[in-house]
Length: 254
Image (cartoon, rainbow, N blue to C red):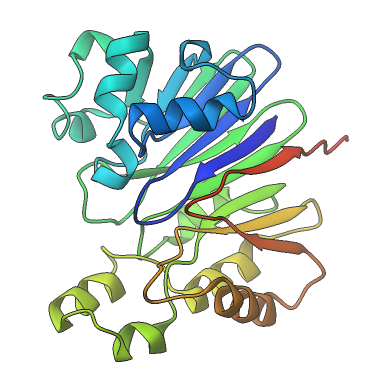
């Protein structure tokens, strides 16, 4: 599995997974011209995408969905609750409803619900014969059952949205600060670190801190906070809003 983060943050989110035979997008949060440009960096055309997985229906995750599907007839995997939020964007005959797990050729995809304030919001545990990936952004809370499923995977693309002190002393109105800090909001650096400390294992190769706030966080603070909490020799990097990031193929041979 080759993993390419096309962009991550409040202005747009999308990640490309390239397998032996299939190519999958997680979210389409950029305009169609932007998506096309980002994909072409890796010699991928929009028509080459075999499936789109959605995490939730906020604009920074579905901003380019309507045009992408209309131009390329790409199938969208979602759940019925989430679809109720996007009926004006895509026809039902372009959707495949999924609630727990699916297989798209070599990709096995487990779906878990997140606590974000968007109907039907989910995260994913995705694996092929070589690699396992946890993909979770936009949630303020993960329960013990979900954490158990996430343990000892190879790659974690994991929300580390804000530094609590920066958020509380920053420019957001109080009601928005409350929303960000709530279970229906976003994970802080501290919470991300505590969760990751519990779930990483001997097979973990890399952690990507994602969906960083440009106002309430910095890459340096996120890396420092999470690294100190985890306190293990594991590669940790931050995803970028305005640049793509190729994680390459992480081969974890048994």
